[in-house]
Image (cartoon, rainbow, N blue to C red; front, side):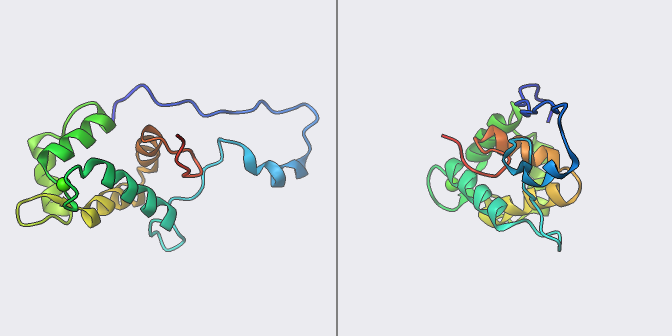
Length: 141
Ligand SMILES: [Ca+2]
């Protein structure tokens, strides 16, 4: 969401000797993205695992929900600023929250599932990369 510090994809220049059947073995290129969605347009297990891991990073008090402060920290790291009151309201309206309005783990996953399935996959990748994942959804230390 409006952040310029997106890491550049590593792209190798095409070689002049390139032949058509070289495509099949090109799996190790860092620019190759794994799928975030299954054929049924569900998020993949790998994506879900990454999201759960990210959720846990912000759930500082480990009560399995993100309260206002924890959400603000997540949004600030991801977008550069906390969610606006309107955005918080939308989150509470559309995604699974507890009675106090804190976002549950399921709600957090829903949020990314909606973003990813509604065509904003790039935004999801941006957040994943920002949180230290590569395009194979491996966590880089
Ligand atoms: Ca919490």
